[in-house]
Length: 177
Image (cartoon, rainbow, N blue to C red; front, side, top):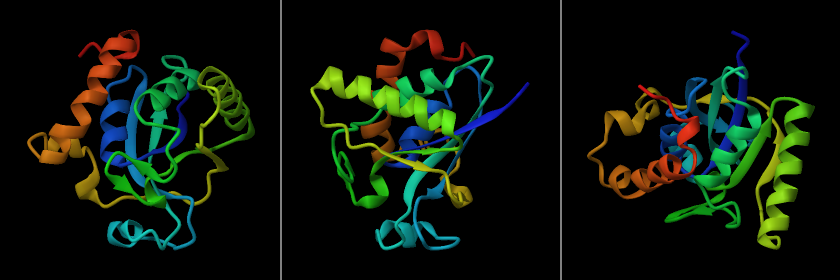
């Protein structure tokens, strides 16, 4: 298996992690921080917005089972790419819509996808495209958050609608287990 990685920021990483974990071909989803200037930031530091980092997920996947194009489809389906520095009640630069590309091929594919989405929507996509810099893995308690905390109010209110949307529109990409 030739594993590749993609890094997405679509608001709270608990939400994006829960969605990507359900996709066939995704080997691992790691919450973390990137795109800022503070080395080794903590969650508390990132929450202030002063670090410049976004909450992101690094999606490690098998490209023979799921394409980068399908990861992009899911990414844009599970968040609002037209709101700057905000997803729902989560407000701040750390919640910005962003794709941190690991190589030029990803940048080109994401750029083309965004252009097509802008054409469909009549413009308004604010998703940042940037090269992936240093990725800082989030603290352990953020890993697999939804599965470990399904009863939390945030998880109950925000994540199930995203998962329902995946089941409705992208059932063919979901794991069968």
